Length: 258
Image 1 (tube, one colour):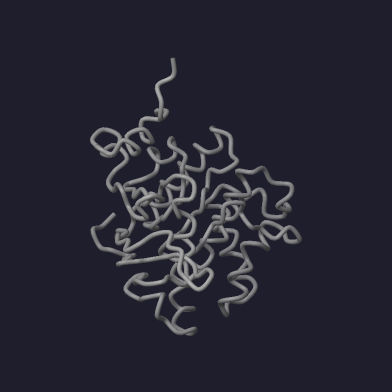
Image 2 (spheres, helix red, strand yellow):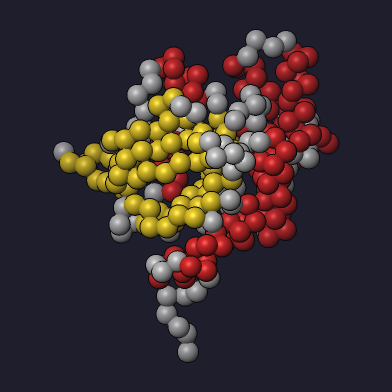
């Protein structure tokens, strides 16, 4: 990991227009993601974690602010430039979002068929290589419905890696997985980050995964509409003077039970 920023979010305000006015979810949020790190976005329900991610990948437009991906502002980019910016990252959605009518291999081949001029043999080799990297070489011809939940997440990650992006965005990667499968996925994320230098931005609320994978985290808060904590997981667990942050990282209830 270097100390070079690959993502810069500056003075970002996000929300939606309703009944002639604006409903703000996050206001004037700024942070940076360093190249090669695993960066986690945390927060309680309704804090705007997944909505922030959708803005970072260009699915939603902010009310104000700037989001630079490797130096290029995705907010102000025109259609052609936005397509170029989006080629720099891959996305793994919470439920995998694999196409059920395609095999695992065909799912990973799809971005290569859509966005490159490679011949069929090259596409096949690249797709099989990505599946090998996530431990699914034996599942290339299986349908998504025949894969376990953890295997579906790995296949979705392989597809997100198909175009060799510098950044991978993961939305709740451990959702719906048992503890052992979740731990295996955590190890895969760390291995890919360390061996390939991929930058990961992960939306999660799973405490074991946060401590297993995250180099740094930010915590969003619905009430203040902003970032209430930032640092390493250990720093926030041991040193935060914010009561909510302390309870989150120490897995404490709001009230002491009798």
